[in-house]
Amino acid sequence: MSERMNIEQLVRSKLEGQEITPSPGTWKRIQRRVRWKQFMRFDPGKFNIFYAAGVLVTAAGLIALFQSDPETVRTEDRSRRQGPAPSEMITPVQTDREAADKVPLTGETERGGDTARKNVPAKEEVIVTGDESAREIREQSSGNAATEKPPAEVTRETAVREEGTVREPAYNTLVAYFTSSATSGCAPLKVRFFNQSANHLSTTWIMGTSTPVTGENPAYTFTEPGRHHVTMTAMGEGGQTASFSQVIEVYPVPVADFIIEEGLPGSDGPQTYDLINCSTGAVSYKWQVLGENKNPLEGWASDAFHPSLPAGVLPGQPGFIRLVATNEHGCSQAAVRELPQPPLPAGPQLRFPTAFSPNTAGPTGGLYSPHEKRNDVFHPVFDTEPLDYRLRIYSRRGVLVFETQDIYRGWDGYYLQDRAAAGVYVWMADGKWLNGEEFLLQGDVTLIWSDQR
Amino acid sequence: MTGDKEILAGCIKGRQDAQRKLFDKYSRLLLGVCNRYAQNLEEAEDILQDGFVKIFLNIKDFKGEGSLVAWMRKIMVNTAITNYHKMRKHRYHDDLEEVSELKFEDHSWGEADFTGEELLKVIRQMPEGYRLVFGLYALEGFKHREIAEILAIDENTSKSQYSRARRWLQEKLIKLKDGEEIVR
Image 1 (cartoon, chains in turn green, brown):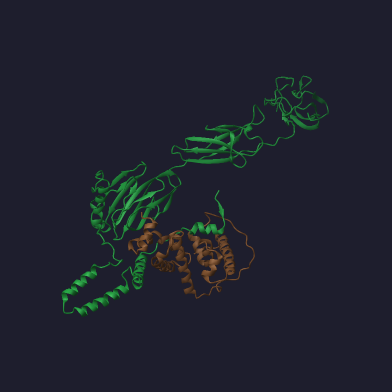
Image 2 (tube, chains in turn red, yellow):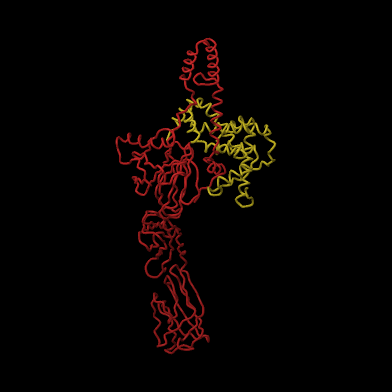
């Protein structure tokens, strides 16, 4: 089933999107080097070494000029500070508490007074979204505070949500939030998570019973059915953390299984295949006939549990039966089995038994019914009636004990109205088939009297 | 979520928060790229740092032709190559064993045959010259002409190195799959 690929495709598929999380100090080092290089580079729009040098020269000149008037120097000093701010300067860092307090405010104003969800300190805020199976729990806490305060006092806040989107909170406010490609499905369920957090440095994910993984948008395959809690913890610049969880519901998958039993051939009616359903965990079934190339064929389909397939559906060609078993969650599995090859039509033939046990009550006259499986008359078994037929049976001494030209009359084991002796007799059959082909067969048969020993 | 466009605009202005966002968003992927050209993770991180510094200082040169990620990848790869030249003093052909030029039957592989980790370990064991050419061609999608330029070698050398690298890797993987060799 799985596709084969060449070495380039293999390497690409495995390594193309490979992600490795850099070690924690990497960003700081890059930042330092970028700032230094920017500072050393001439750029009229930015504060850099040339500006700094210019400012120094100017300041020195001014100091020399107005040394007698200190007031002027102070003014000059102030104006320099108010000049173009260095681009490296960033918004003042908010403390965690400020950050936490700020979000609900913006949330409320943006929602235009919707006070349904306030910043009420609660143990857990449960938001039922459009998808009922997804229970989303949102919490935010200060990493440092959490260790000092009892958990109940940790500030928690509601998600700032509107029509499924997250409002970008003020800069530096850590918000943990993610979406997923699915919230429920059949096992094995592969789910990709999309990190929508704001102002986070790193995120750690705990999915089911797996070991924590880091990464921005990890994917995980849930193999075990059940409810799996997925928790993402985002860490902010100040070391504070925020978590968000979601439940992924994984449904079990039924097992589709069946065997094909051949109906009895040649007796009454056309041949059938009995499809014996061995599936487990399913509530509905769909049966289909597939052709040699496994494409579905029209003409027969069934929803029954144990259907019977008429052999005429696939006259003389190989084929397959597919069963799709589905459970109450809509999860399904398919099983495909090859149909037994119908036996090749052999040339007409007569087959004789090697022993028989006549009726002990007296001569029956030897007439028999071809569909009756009895053994008190010695006669051939055949599919096609021959055109000409003669059967002769001799005792070991060479006495002809029975002769007939009627294929529907066999030997009843009596000779001249008396029981023939138990033992071995030799038979010879000759005649002609409908196609003109002649036959001559011979063999022996043991006569057994069931009341003698 | 901030889109690439906003991040890019911010980075061009030299805004630090935008640089930070760019780093957060792509550093993992780009470290994965660097890691394929480095001997170890430490070296890969050095390449990543150098690369990001170049990215931030030159981001205004990014013309928006092709994707930002592709552009950054290219910078990382170029940084890795520069690093390679610096570290190995150009002894390009020396680490190549002689491999016969016989046509090698192409083996086909299944998705589940190896993990990314295993593959990377085998690729790291590759002779340097093979690894660069193989990575540039198979993973980065460079043409042999470009590789020749980057590595300062002949175009034909690139081609033959590539087919040897391919064969080398193939043999290693077959052995690995048959369990003859355990990758450490």
